[in-house]
Image (cartoon, rainbow, N blue to C red):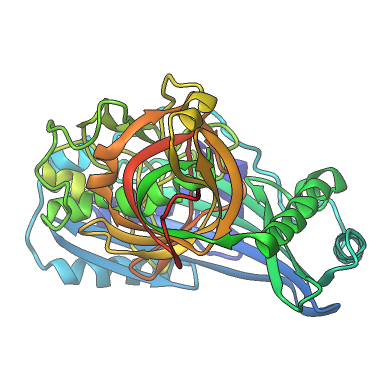
Length: 489
């Protein structure tokens, strides 16, 4: 949010700098540059994990603080960082970063135009400390309660794992116009995994998550986790009786919500500006062209209230916004940070993100989703003669430049004559993003954004994101499984 004296003050504690002095040094350091900023961070994390009735980890608050100064001319970037924030450290960082660029000057118009972020964004989430509100003893007691509840759900439960974590990331950005911006992004999550064994000794596990832009009291409250624990057990018990998945080419229906991890991996990365500027994405040079079926509209939107991937502004100071990437099948644009936007002659989109002050920003997703369609989800199921309903997606492998992927379905169900029938496991979805987008022929009206899960890795950096979708039907998708897709008599 737009900074005030109180919000900025904590970043200057134990420093010989004043905010005004810091702004002056940054402005001098960015003189003649195309883009750049000071990025300052104070973060704290805690985590507790328990498995096999023993505490495996109790981290009561590790933290990281420091700053990075970036200055750029075209593709050339100077970046210097320090764990200490004082006048000497900041002036030294500016000097080192400028030395990388030499004496060449940039275009001041670029700096002024790309840095003119003056409006304060609407408040999207509370800035509360996610670790406050419960003592460590109360948190441990809550984890013990979750574990006991899960074991009591069934005599077939053989193990319960509970993992809690919370992070507070406070950032202060001084942009090229000397404007200070401050935000605190809270996150908290609770992961519950339950393993079960049947009479033949076969074991399976199911898991569920609670979390998002939340605090510890949100995720450790019984009303938040009780149904999630039951869901984890139900998944494990279903997997015990599930048949092996069929293989072959068939229609796929994907459940709303987390199934959009396929969109994130197989399509989303290919729509990031850096890959397209370098011409290594399958979407490079295709703005204005049809790249998907007319049913498909894809949006990345960082300004959605209370969603996991939401941010008030990106890690360069650009306000988050709604970016329509594909509209009715037509590619409209890419997700951009300031460097790639300038080099491509377009405006930044609020997608310049970094893991910490030790990293430089690059184009990243926020909340990425398929927009609602017009179909009733029940009608989508009825339209399938023989196929699969994917209720939960797992991990996989993706070539982000080509969009080719193979991803695992944690749990799926056979669709026979328009009805969801028996569960199956071990299904692998194989294909490429461009083909999938063109083979989507029905999209439901039940959009769901996944709030509990989503972290994205790119070039060694991880950031919190989210994804979502309505019920979606993809025709003629390749499925890898251990059974041939021979219709039952």
